[in-house]
Amino acid sequence: MMDDALRVLKEVFGYDRFRTPQDEVIRRLVEGQDVLVVMPTGGGKSLCYQLPALLRPGTAVVVSPLIALMQDQVSALSQWGIRAGCLNSALPFEELAATEQALRRGELDLLYIAPERLLQPRTLDLLGHCRLALFAIDEAHCVSQWGHDFRPEYLQLSRLADAFPGVPRIALTATADGRTQQEIVERLALRDAARFIQGFDRPNIRYRIGQKDRAREQLLRFLQQEHPQDAGVVYCLSRKRVEETAAWLSERGFNALPYHAGLPAELRAHHQHRFLTEEGLVMVATIAFGMGIDKPNVRFVAHLDLPKSIEAYYQETGRAGRDGLPADAWMVYGLQDVIFLRQMLESSQAPELQKQIERQKLEAMLGLCEITSCRRQTLLAYFGENDHSPCGNCDTCLEPVPIWDGTEVARKALSAVYRSGQRFGVNHVIDILIGQASDKVRERGHDRISTFGIGKELDRNQWRSVFRQLVARGYLGVDAQGHGVLHLSERCRPLLRGEEVLELRHEERKAAGKQSRFSR
Ligand code: ADP
Ligand code: ZN
Image (cartoon, rainbow, N blue to C red; front, side, top):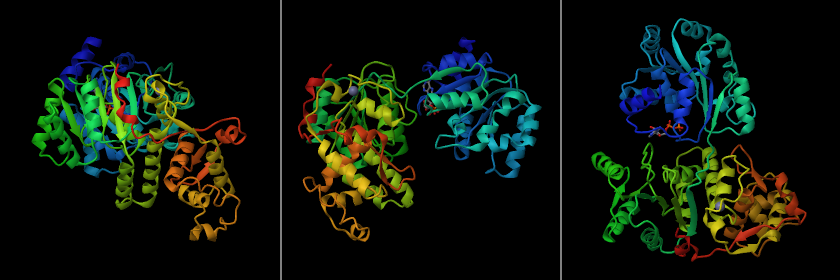
């Protein structure tokens, strides 16, 4: 059977090998077992049900709440010659009728369907008359009542177990801690489910983040000393910088090509093709490059500018070292990047709430940059994995960072949050600390509380950094609605009681220059 699977992988999807644990997932599912898959975004979850859909007789039914993406998925599958259709409330009647017809005739390999539609008696009846290969339940964490994305319809999906007892089911998600995994298995009534849990950790990637100090020279040193012959990606924020950097590296003997959305489509495709097929090519790119690129031996991903969120950083750096061999995630950033990103964010047309959320994501990214403890720990904690110990394979683990004792300023910060009622965002609290009697401060009477003006030893930017650290380390929480309101969390008690010391990073301008110490 696995020979068949490999043949289909090559012939239909055009890939040479399975990623772990795709092959094992596929084997179980084709044999008829229920499966739970937790894998980070971009890990390759879709293939886990798309390929079995072709190996098992009948139609595979894919349940997804993301109606907007269904049509894209169906088109992508059609390009591979796979017969797919979708049923959801956004489609015109004629199209729905045609898809149902094709389904009845057994002409569909895959059917994408929204949960509420699937659960209509009419649809269940229709499916009851069809031969079904499997059910795939995407975004399975939506079944968790404690999660952010809870959808009541998902609870009803347990009915599939009784209604279609012989049809194996696979539940997939990118986010589920232990408790949520258990909830998924129970609420979807998966039977003897094989669980495949792939965490976010990419142990072979070495994370390093430094301050900018003539960034290009820093990059050049990094490439010359550590990756003179290797394939890698250099990310820049702007198209102009992409072109300049690619030209500059080429002049210095590197095989470097530019890639951004402003280049003609043919040229982009050509550069991408060269990157995939030639050895040792450096792609200098905006974030337009990378989606769906699967080159196993990318040895480094370098960032010359700050990504706008930890999610983006994780995705972009995740393109390094897919083969499991040592790889570098290298970045330099500066205050200018932060200002630029903030300006971009403020001038966008996005609704205010979305801007708030994006501001917080950027702050979290900066928090990761400024952390004095293990980067990987912080990164994984951001994705909900809280039980990792220091990794020994990031810059802060490998080389102690110069620090100062921030316990006292942290207490002041926490106290200002507390005394103003835990109802305000960082800017207001900083106004209080530095004694800035803004209108809002005066209106609320915060110029008369004991914390007003007790933090004049730091300037606004330094305070921002302190707050980022307090959030990054879990002392302060930020409201989930995106308004940026800060509150004290359980975690800050030992700090307030004087049982814990908060170490903060000294701005060290030369830090990123000392690359040689990291040579493997
Ligand atoms: P997820 O659903 O986990 O976010 P996808 O299923 O969208 O991830 O896959 C991410 C990317 O990886 C896609 O571009 C997909 O085509 C590619 N991919 C998946 N499996 C393989 C494989 N075995 N070999 C090469 N590329 C793969
Ligand atoms: Zn570490």
